[in-house]
Structures are given as C-alpha cells and as structure tokens.
Amino acid sequence: MGKVKCECGHVNPNGTILCESCGRALTEKAKQEKLVDMRYEGSARRSQTYNKTIIDKVWNFFSSVKVGIWIIVLLLVAASFGTILPQEFYIPSNMPAETYYEDVYGVFGKIYYMIGFHDLYNSIWFSALIAALGVSLVIASLDRVIPLYRALKNQRVDRHETFMKKQRLFAEQEGVLQRGEMEKVRTELMKKRYKIREENGSLLAEKNRFSRWGPYVNHVGLIIFLFGALLRSVPGMYIDELLWIREGETLQVPGTDGAYYVKNNGFTLENYEEGEDPEVFDEAIDRVGTVAKNYQTDAVLYRDANNELPGADPELTEVQTESIQVNQPMKFDSFAVYQTSFRQDEMKAMHFALTNKETGEEFGGIVVDLFDQQESYDLGSGYKVELRGYYPDFDGFSESGEPTSKSPLPNNPAFLFNMITPETPDGEVSFAQIRNTMEPLGENEYKMAFKNLETRDVSALTIRKDLTLPILALGGIIFMIGVIQGAYWNHRRLWIREKEGHIYVAGHTNKNWHGLKREIHSVLNGTAIPEPEDRQKD
Image (cartoon, rainbow, N blue to C red; front, top):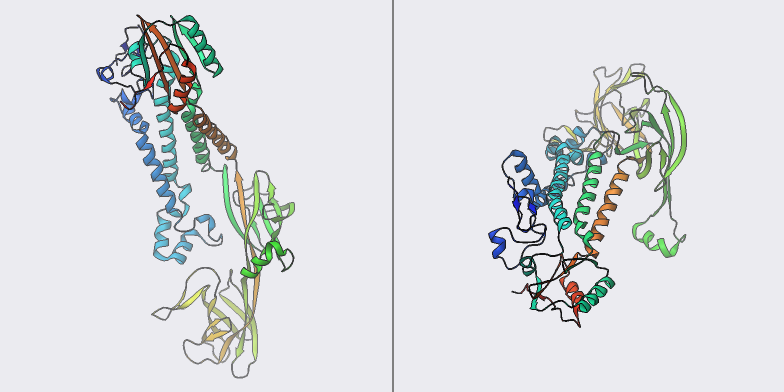
C-alpha cells in the first residue's frame, strides 16, 4: 500500500494520522478535530491499515483488546469447571479415574470424566486457550509498540503549529522569545530532570519516556509466564502427583519412569497436650479436641538398577532414608517429596471364623485383605469358604435385593460368603459385616463370625518436580517491573516555539495532567511566555 509523504519531506506509513516527524495532520478528519489522540502519536497501526489477506485478518483479530478480554473470560470460566469435582490429582491413587468418578459421583461423575474435566488444567483445549492468550498478547503488543517506537524516535523539536494547536495543553500569544527568559526556563526544566533539545529556536523538554513502555513490559512478562505455564504440559518439565502410601508398602515414585521407589516404614502423629503451650493451643484444643504437633512418614528411597531393561524385575538399591515432615521434604535429583496429609486407622484386613451356630465350634479362620481378596479360602477337612461378593462401602440393598456400595473405599466393608462343609456340600450363603451377620437365603447351620480387624495408617505424599519455576519467576519479575514502570512515572513533554511573531506553547502527558500543569506553571511562572490552558473542557 502507498506511503504518505508529508510537506516536511518525511515519508509516513499508509494510515498515519499525524506526521511522525513534524506532527502535521495528514487526514481530513484529523485536520477538523480540535484535539488529536496522542495514544500512539497518530501513527498507523497495522491492524487499522491492512485487511486483505488471511494473515491480515488473523492479525487484526488477535490485535483487538476485546478479543483478549474474551479469551481471559473463557479461561476463567473454563478453570471454574475444574473446581466442581476434585481433579484426578486428588483422588485415591489405588483407584482408576474412570472407575472412581462414576462410583463416587454417579452419572454426573462419569460425564465429568468423559469430557475430560477430571484433568482439565492439563487438557489440550485448556492449553490452547492459554496459547491463544499468549498470541493475543504478542500481536496486540507488536501492533502498538512498533508504531509508537517509530513515532517517538522520529519526533522533531520544531513541531508544526497545527500539531501544537491540537494538544490538550496549549497557549498562543504574539511576541518573541527573550534569551534571558529561555535561559531561565531551561534551568528550571533541568532541575526537574527534563531532557532538553533545541532546534531552529524551538525547544522540546521531555522526561520519563521509558514509562510509555510499561504496558508492553507487562505483556512480555505475561508472555514468559504463559510460556512457562505451557511448558508444564511437556513431559518431564512439571510433576505434581499425590501418592497415598500405606505403612509397609513400597510404591513406584510417580514421574520417575520407574527409576525410583519409596517405602513407608511407618507413620507418626504427635498432638499438642493441654497445658503444653496454653497461650497458643489450649483454646484450640478445647474447641476441636486435638491439634497436630507433628506428623511424619519415615521413608526409604530406592533406585531400580534394572530400570533401563524392559520387562526386567526391579532390583532395588537403597538411596536414602529420611523422615518426611510438613515443609521438610525429602529431595533427590529435581524431585521433592512432601508430607501432605494422612489417614489413620484405615481398614486393612478382616478376620472371620467359620463357626457352627449351635455348638459355637470354630472350623478355621480366614483373613480377607480388603485390597487383595481371594476367590476362595480352603480350611481343610472338607471346609471351604468362597467369596461371592465384596462391597467396600456397603450402602444397603437395592430394590432387587442386591447389596450396593456407595464408593470404592473400604469405609464399611461387607462380604457375601458361600460356606461349604461336609454337612452342606452345596454351601450356605452368609452376608457378613463387622459384628453383623445376615442369612439372606434362609436359616443356616454355619455362620462367618467376625473376629478381628486390622488397621494401618496411610500417608499422603506429594511428589513434585518443577523445572518451569525459574521461567515463571522471571515472567513475574518482568511483569512487576512493567507495573512499577507504568504506575509511578509518566511521559511528559513541553514544546515552546516562536514563528512569525507568535509564541506557541504546548504540553502533553500520557497521564497525571494535574502534575504536568503544576510543573509547567512553576517553570513558566515569572516569564512572559504564556502558560498553556487545559482545553479538555472545550
């Protein structure tokens, strides 16, 4: 597209409103306006000039501030959906996500899982929204910062009188500039840290131009921050997994590709005693009963020597032993293992005895592991117990008479046994719970008598690895620099020009007009140079 040549000889990009050099109005609309928009110094923005090719349309779309705001709104709405149900990170590690959400939350949970809301913040479409916001920030910044930079770099000292007349602060009177008065003005301006340029008897005083770049520094910081956030979806860059590990268990450390294993040697919980620290904890103890003083997991870290051999059995070598406490993680490589939570007295196994109801004689006992049940238990001498059903969180019977479980967690375990004895070779059905036995198919000769319950503590360990943290920190620091840069300084300019027996004075700032007017008053006070008036009210 053709460029526009000003009368001063400067060649401006097509669409420029005010000449980048002398400030003359180049369009009929700009010539008729009393005040000009100085946000981008009247320079042409690409989005307002080109609109022919696909690239132009994409550029124009993402350069819009409204589009950027809508992307932010969509991100906020999308993020809120991830808070309706717990994310996959927070569910028990021993349950597959596809099973857990349906079992615990029913049909809604199943739909929530199917559409991917269970791992929303790592989903492709959520990452695409973040990427779209980043693209919008880049294009919107370039669309504005390039013409602004070009205009501020090319500005002349002796601006055309029409440019000065269209400024918000402007004054004009007949007369000539006296050398002594100009010297006084220069001295006062230098005291106020203005940079002074003079050309052809005209003066331009300017300070804090760097503040104009504050919003764009903000954008750079946000772009770096968003880039760091996107890197979290790259394998190996960010890991934040919750590992529920029971006492005595040895489990693979998530995110290490089988290279490391951790064992829970024991869990310890210490509570504050009443009177131990009366000023701080006695009131809380009276209110809630107990206040945790310390809880920790005595952990052993192992490395698998056969990790590089596909299909090989693990060969564990002890690496380190450490007590993991709150805010005192176990660290190795780029990983940190934090003590996050715990669950005490989780049911581990239940002991039952096959008992003759009439005589009370026991013919053998079985131990049902609540996490690894057997199909049958042979007691010898013709006595056998078959496990026909397991209901970890028994919630009554359905309309058809079938037992139901409201969750996969062993909160209220119940069992359906088939008891085979020499007297009853076809078996008798018994429904057994803790201290409760039912006979759903009629009177039995034998029963499964509850004998004992095994419990154990469970630790919740957070496995964290974050290689994106330095990038996020850098983005945050740059963002704050931009905030300070744009908030605490403002770009101020004062033009003084004499031409054909007239003195022209104009001033401009990107904000805080009251401060600029006060400075101009103190600089021009006591001289014959006219003080500009604020024409915004006109």
